[in-house]
Amino acid sequence: MKLLKFASLIFGVQLLAQEIDSSSALFSLAEAERSFAKTSVAEGARLAFVNNLADNAILFRPGPVKGKPIWVARKPAPFSLKWEPEFVDIAVSADFGYSTGPSEFGGWQPNAPADQYGYGYFTSIWKKQADGAWKVALDIGIETPKTNGETQFKFLSGADKKGSQKIVAEKDATESLLKRDQEFSAAWSKNSEVSNFFATHARIHRSGKLPTTGMDGVKTALVLVSECKAELAEVASSGDMGYVYGTYRKSDQETGWYLRIWKKTEEWKIVLDLQAPNPPQKK
Image (cartoon, rainbow, N blue to C red; front, side):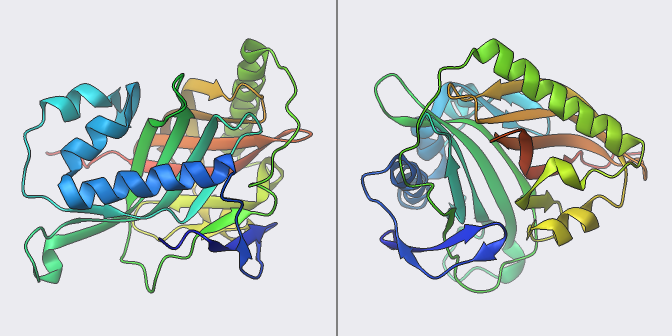
């Protein structure tokens, strides 16, 4: 496995390859994602999801649903689903993190025609369980063009080092995150300047396009103003990482679901902003 040396990313600048601490929680999270993906290829997507989803995991189909019952009830099928993590980050508490990367689906027959394949980017929220195992708590994706070249794993400098954890009140942290998310949505809907809500290395995921990273991607993605309504927010026990999901409506009337992953140092900043549109309504 190519998990000993990765490229590091900080403040939107890619650094030289460095070794990741194989004893770190970041490493174990990346390993969990890769093991999940390998099971899908070797034994099928159904078994992979049944084994790796938390009991209360949320999937988007296109809206949020309880994911595990869907995969438990699903019959094995000749369907190929492959993916690989491109970026992983983790909370100071080391029990909450997220991963994202390219995926490929369909084309289950060897040497299948190119038009049998679809491509996308997944984003998964992972939580460590009482027994120490990582499980997926939320999973959502977008369709994208095919990526060019081999996936290069990235992580923020120092993310594989143990940080000092502060005790936080989870309810208060969740409320502060939700308030921040609502402030961003309100500013965006008024076409106000919102770039200060984003971390400089923020990832932007939009359907039909490969993800972009950094402030140039942020400015491009925010051309179409959206009205957003949050439905759920959750934070790590350390209070430095969390997510919010809900519905959105763009100024061109596109509707769908958004996921924003936030990190906090002095204040909450968006590190990943995703919009997954609803399928067109049939006339």
